[in-house]
Amino acid sequence: PLVTTKEMFKKAYEGGYAIGAFNINNMEIIQGIIEAAKEEKAPVILQVSASALKYANPKYLVKMVEAAVEDSGLPIALHLDHGENFEICKTCIDLGFTSVMIDASKYPLEENIRITREVVEYAHSKGVVVEAELGKLAGIEDEVKVSAREATFTDPDEAYEFVQKTGVDSLAVAIGTSHGAYKFKGEAKLDFERLEAIQKKLPGFPLVLHGASSVMPEFVEKCNKYGGKLQGAQGIPVDMLRKAASMGICKINMDTDLRLAMTATIREVLATKPEEIDPRKYLGAAREAIKLVVKDKIRNVLGCSNTI
Ligand code: G3H
Ligand code: 13P
Ligand code: ZN
Image (cartoon, rainbow, N blue to C red):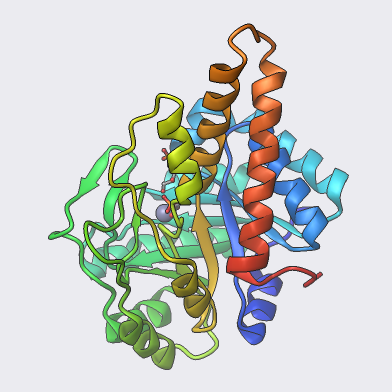
C-alpha cells in the first residue's frame, strides 16, 4: 500500500539526506520516476497539483499510482501539491492520498494557522499527513504570479509558532527558491542563515524545499537547439540543494527539470525523425529521459540511494 512520509522523513532527517517529490501528470512521467527509484532503491513522493488533477482525472492518477506501488514494492507516498483550500485537501484524502499540502501561505499568519489546523484535524483523523507553507515563494504558481518583491521569506519565530499551533507534519519554507525555469536574474543565492535559524527553532522537524529544480543546462540547450525558446533560464545549483538536505530539508520538490527533460527529448525526436508518427517513439524516449534525470537527482542531489 501507499505509505505516509512519516517514516521516510524521520530516516532522512537523521541521515542528512532528502526525499524527492516529483510532480506527475501522466503514465510516462510516473513510470520514469518509479523505474529510477526502483533501480536506486529509494523511497519516493509522487505529487499532484490541482491542475494535474484536472488534466488527468484523479481516478486515473490514483489507479496508476496504485499500480506503481504494486509493481515496484517501493515505499511511495501520494501527495497533493499546493492544495489551496480545505475542500481540495479533503477530496484527495478521501481518494486515498497519504499526504496533502495545504498552501494558505498567501493569507496572514492567523488565517494560515486556522485553515491549516482545519486540514490537519481532518487529515490526522484519516491517518494522512499534512505539509503547510509559511512565507511566500517568488515565481509562478498555477495562475498566480507573485513578484519577487512581494515574496517574503519565512520568519523563524513564526515558523515555531505555526508548527505548535497547527500540529502540521512538515513545513515548506521560503529561503529564496521559486517555481519555474527562471529562478534568478543574476547569481543564485539562498538564505542559509535563515534556514539554520528555522532548524534551530524546530530541531528534528522535517522542512520542505519547493522550487528546487536545477534547470539542467543540457536540457535547456537541447530545447533551444530543436526550436525551443528558453532565454535566461536558471535554477538552483546542486551543491546548494545538497547543503539544504543536510540542514533539515527532508523533501525537495522538482517539476521543472522533468518538464524540461521531457520536452527537450520530444523536440529532439520530432526534429530528427520527421517521418515518425508513433507516439510511443517520442513518449518512450521522454520516459527514459525522465528516468535518467530522477536517477541523477536521487544519487547526486538527494543522497537517498539504497535507503530502503
Ligand atoms: O508548484 C507548481 C508545480 O510545478 C505544479 O505546476 O500547477 O502547472 O501542475 P502545475
Ligand atoms: P520547480 O519548478 O523548481 O521544479 O519546483 C516544483 C515545486 O515546487 C512543486 O511544488
Ligand atoms: Zn511548490
